Length: 388
Ligand SMILES: Nc1ncnc2c1ncn2[C@@H]1O[C@H](COP(=O)(O)OP(=O)(O)O)[C@@H](O)[C@H]1O
Ligand SMILES: [Mg+2]
Image (cartoon, rainbow, N blue to C red; front, side, top):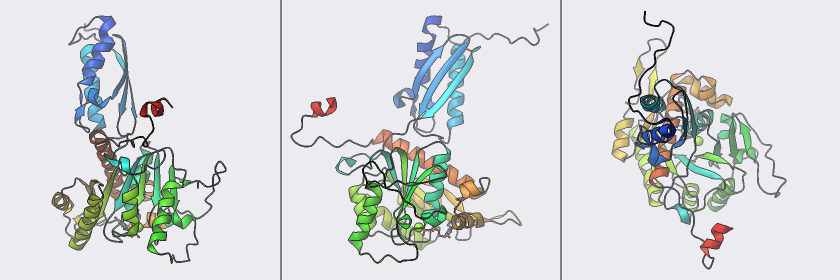
């Protein structure tokens, strides 16, 4: 008979001496292409550890984002490569992520202490869904395992307090008596001017004061350590956008538009402003792209969706389109973003996919143009600085 119940021994495709197995597998894995980063694993420093015998292979991979869109394909290629050397081995594959800082040439701007990547969410116009997109992207990234903060930079019309059902009670750190502790919700760190002021009292500050208040939300809040700090920008291209893009080292901007032509024209203005101050665009999100009728399941493109075309026209990656859905609005009003409130809805799934694509674009930017550290102050011996 054919040895029923007994696992058949396979012959390796590539034969190496037992003592060289780990090194051989490590080298072979280094040549595997990461389908998301479009580079070989060795060049990305992703193969951290290989420990192999013919019976058991332990591999530790370190990716540049937590859930890259083609992670499953990558794992399959890794397992196939291992099988060429040790086809009968039990494989223990651990995958972690280490997020790097993007934003090349930003050394003349300040980073936010302990924050790897500041990601702006902006548009030229109000009401297109910036706060909704910022909140849900932040929640989705945190759910994937990243350390995430959300900064509400809309000083005149903060909406993060409502979108997360939070008010006040900001504590000041007892360590230095001035650093404000961000609030915690759904695994996120949150800060908004709305936590510091009475929500019913309108802001009557002048431009420069508003810009200063906004800068304090970056510099005087205990954000560290974060992989991503998502910034919900106010509409337009005013004082806040300008001072923050001049002062803060930013990984890139996510632009939000709706399909209407006027919204796209506004987004082009926002993009031009970011470009002027050296901030790259991570991509375009089209909100309210379509509506799926729950009676007939038909997809209605109310505003005639053209997200992909618009992204091409702007010369930026298209990050995806979001449906117009009642639970999105309800989630925003009730304080639980739709990604948590209705995780199986089309909108929640679209948000998760967009968040993962944003993280991937940040990871690519971090490899192509890593954030530079500032040069040592004049007169200081750089060697002494390194040696502390
Ligand atoms: N895809 C969507 N489906 C349903 N309602 C949405 C959607 N996107 C945004 N909204 C709702 O539209 C309103 C404006 O969105 P908001 O995120 O506050 O816009 P912005 O920050 O650009 O001013 C909010 O009430 C929000 O809940
Ligand atoms: Mg808003």
